Image (cartoon, rainbow, N blue to C red; front, side, top):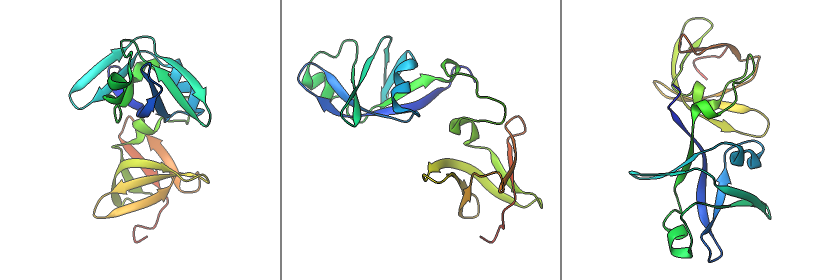
Length: 166
């Protein structure tokens, strides 16, 4: 889906009086957010395309200057907006690597053929990522090689070695 927009960050506050905003980045490392353009700043039904956002580190966070946002009031109106980027702007993942957004929605089945549901989203825990699987109930499945045996986005499936009772 080349035109699909993926959430890559969020505007979380204002910075100064000249229209700068504080940004939370969902990329690793966080500064990589500035590599992907254009941004789509989306809040509700409003989708503002920003061709050349200026992003810089500030303390432990990031701040950005967006085209056409020149004062504190205009910046404040964007707080809470998502920063989205077209999926086709991201580098192709290496073999065996996947973007989280590409795993969301895939069916999850055990190696014994038991359907567990589908991936709602993922969580970063520090030790490893975790698949949040919604089915007959919510399950938290570690995204580690001993558990995740096969990922097949073409078939819409993740196969796991996981006890369905857990």
